[in-house]
Length: 269
Image 1: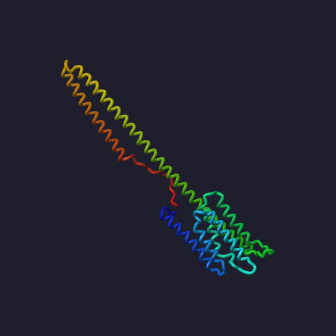
Image 2: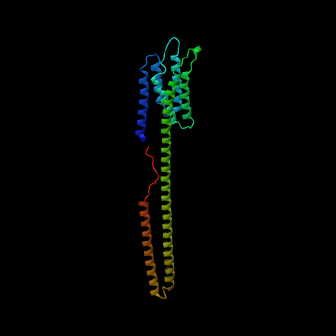
Image 3: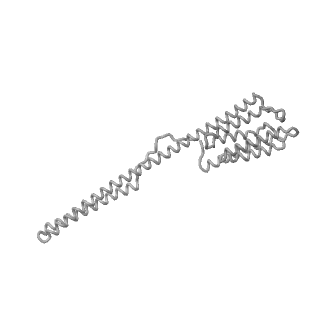
């Protein structure tokens, strides 16, 4: 499960701090002059691995190159190489694979670590550089690197799939809400037309009856009285119809049509 929100950010910061402490504690086991300094810089740079994975990867690789250069000095061994705090390289590579937004960065990070490890088998007697790993150790390093890379890539793919599922569910929910709003709008328009027809018909009847009552008022008071009663009854019926339609509109506003969430699978990561 992938936490989100404030809790998720707190967990992420705790993980970054834990990784940095692991690298720093690993550097404390070595007694060369610059081991703790280089390990501390690697640990410090890993704190920014989520926001700047590519930059952190470049910094850690540069520090490891300085580490190996200091370890190959002819008269002084200022750093230990290889050392357990070099695991920072794997952490940095994993961060690039998992957090990078470009498609080529994960492959570049994996290739850089593989090439850097392969450089450890190179022997240059003229410059005093001796290999620190044979073919068997190189295969072990490569196997470990590929295992970490594949694990990070699988997590990266799973995260992208979860994000796409969440986006798809959000869009489906938005489309459903839009359909509900459109249906409610169409229903209100139909009710408004019905209200218009009722009022228009009632007014037309009342106008005709009023004209008729006016024309027969002096000649036939009974017919005029009947017309006036018809006008009153038509007006009351129109008011009742308007109240009924307005009541329906209010009920529609207070209790909208029920919404059924989409049945698509939702991610749980």
